[in-house]
Length: 173
View (spheres, rainbow, N blue to C red):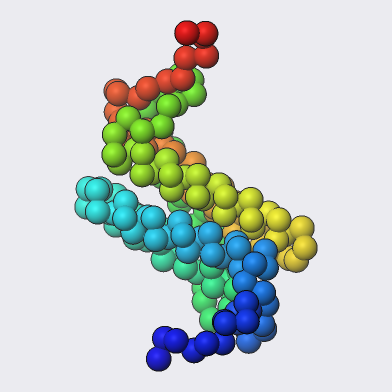
């Protein structure tokens, strides 16, 4: 049964059985990753097959990070430097197709707009994870992975715009 009523007092269980308040920074961190993962699920519906596969792989990696943040590290394979490097290489590969020349105005098309929202959610997740790392030990691979993920979402958005990238003009109108 999905309704357990154990959270009715404002607390939740971590994977190790520990009870914490639902607004605990740890819960905020993995909750924001859950939000990002859900949003990536929406985005997959607008992507080509190869990009859809990449996003799905990333979603699975986000679940692993969320599990670790929920103190379930003994149940999962931890994110590795190799996976961070793979994401870094993806960013570099997509970057070859785009020539950036300033601040980008988000939303040139539906896909780029959705990816930019996902990127901002990833950035918020990163801030929550950094806040958590000031209180408790968080592996540096987690922070690096989420940072690289926001880079990837940014460059994937720019790729979806191709030559129609709109830049911010800082001149007075």
